[in-house]
Image (cartoon, rainbow, N blue to C red; front, side, top):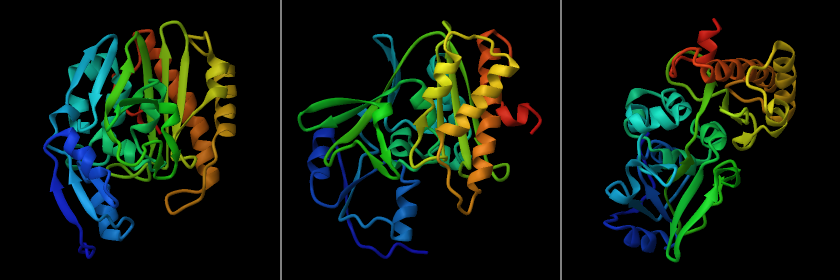
Length: 298
């Protein structure tokens, strides 16, 4: 299907120029375009102008600074997977990036675009939530930091104000381990029916987040409180964690799955992701990139 809607196209040369253009009515940023082009084709969005921000160097790159891992908004998922810095400091994000769609999509899709699309099933949402990441938003008045836990407001709705531009993300650095589980209908390219991200710090502080089981990606505070201070949860604690996880979510029935299947599978995924994270923290467990569900023989 062709794109029937007419719009202007401008390639921004600087962040200042991009911000000026995005302040205009109907202006929409274009980075990887993997979501945006599909929405244009389907008539879900009708911009007056596409502002191409792909060439802005300030929005690219990965580096460590002041105890934080910096990821530019225009960094692709392929770059995240291949980055030694991400592999060392945020392996859970690398694991999730490897499950994003297909190789072709990962070569083009950006982490900034994925977060700004704000669909409930976005793969980078749960990992960034458990990393307590901050979103750095460039505005005409300077850079504003928004905690990831305050970013998602609803389906395709974020805390990004009109005229703002996501510049990148900062993630605190520290010894930890984690696991990402993504439930799909089949092997290969598919959106998540449900996803779970689990992270445990060296001191036994846990972070849990869910995707595709609520109007937005969200944290799991009940499970986090249950596991606090525990490094090797036993079967009884894992069973409690699964039950609490099922109580924290609000799944729906749609073309990809029923609500009850999503709820039950989140309980299974939380148990297995916690087990995997605990094993990895202890220097055991499968290498990052091995799917939690497949490792368990699902």
